[in-house]
Structures are given as structure tokens and as C-alpha cells.
Image 1 (cartoon, one colour):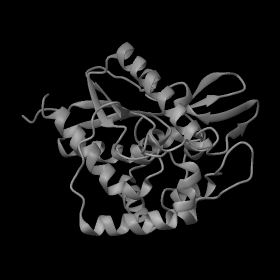
Image 2: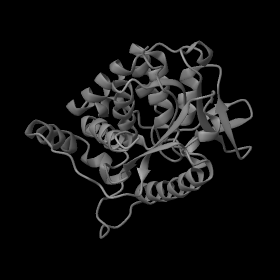
Image 3: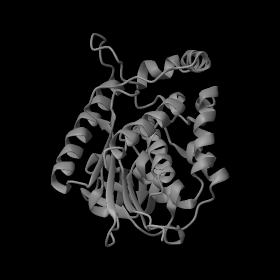
Length: 289
């Protein structure tokens, strides 16, 4: 008799471009015949998890890989709003082109996305209602993406309070909680990079040089921090320590760590590298089970 699949309650952290690694983790889990029976995520984790629950992860992966061809700038809708640098509407509208919005209740598995209400100073957990709305609220990084207004709420990125929402994933008897932390403070093991990848990255970097100048944290400690670099680094440090506290408190059965040095938070042109980083991290942990 064939053994039943091991069921998994999957928790995916935020991390902007680093969160693309979640795709590699999910693919590795499926290749080993694990069954993901519920999912919870914050920010990029909510996006990857939500699209997975619609059954459209392959289409999302294809879209992410296409960003290597310098399409990302056309998806960045800058705004002069004091509440954020980017609206984010173009990105989510593009996602809706191949994954139509639907109710969370209609997804194939239980799903939860986490945002933070600045007005009421509390976490907001979406387990029902519009999937698009839940993801849009969860990814609203303060000062980068404009917040989402909802009646008496002002919603921003869930990482502000809970970047690894283990308390909100639906558990059932016999399942295994697997938490994926893509901002882990661990050494980076760099993957092999093909000549074609180097060429694509070079082209992309030229096209977004000005955007990087103002918005992306420098990788050099000697460089002066600009306004957005300072905000980004502060937000990253805060979410890292909060996530580490959550890990100590919940002690998930399986923890998959991806180094926070795998890429900068806006390096969406490194999608292929990030997927492989997630796959390698998952293999390293799952091989020991």
C-alpha cells in the first residue's frame, strides 16, 4: 500500500525580491511528494502563497523570469504621494491579467495574508474576501508602496509586525509546519551564474540605475545611506529581529532559511537565481529529515 503524502502547513515570509525563493521551495516540496494543505504569508510570501493556492504558480514563475528582460520599469508606477514612492497598481494589474482575482474562500486550500493597520496599531489577517485586496495590503512596504485605505483602516506591509505569520496558518492533525524565512542572517552561498544571466543583469542594471540610486540599499558599507536606503535597512533589521522572535516562540517542525544577502530587496531581475536559492535551501533541510 502506498504511504499517504505528508501534509504541510506552509508559512512564507516577506522579503520583496528575496521572496521569489519561495517558488523554489514549493517546487522542491512538490517534487518530494509533500502535500501543501494550507498556507499563510506576509508581503511577498502572501503573493507567492496566494498565487500558488490559485494553481497558477507556473504562470507566475514565467512572469517573474520575464522581468530579467528589463520589463520591470514599465510596471513601476511612480507617484508624488507623500505616503509612498510606488502605487503598485501596475504590478498587481499585470498579475491579474493571468490570475484573475477571486475570493479567498474559493481557493483550493486555506490561505491567510497578513497586513498591519497603522491607525488601529494592529495586525490584520485576511482569510476571506478579495485575494487581490489582501495581497495589495500585505505588500504595501511603508514609504515605498502607497498604503491601502479600508474604511477606518490604513493598511501597510504585514512585516511591520509579523513577517513570518506562523500563528495564522491553518493546522490539521498530522501536518508538518514548514516556515520559510528569506531574510535569514546566515552566510550566502553564491550559485553559478551563466554568461546569459550576466548579460541580462547588466542590461537591466543600466536601465534602472537612477531608480537604484534613490531606492535601493547599497551593498557597500562604505557608501553613504540615502533616505530610502536608510528606511529600507531599518525596516529589514526590524523584520529580521521580529521573525527571529517568532521562530523561537513557535519552533516550527521545519525551518528553511534563505540568506538575506541573496539579493537586494528590489533585485527582481534575479528571479532565476532566487528560485534556485530557495530550491537549494529546501534540499539542504529536507535531505536531513
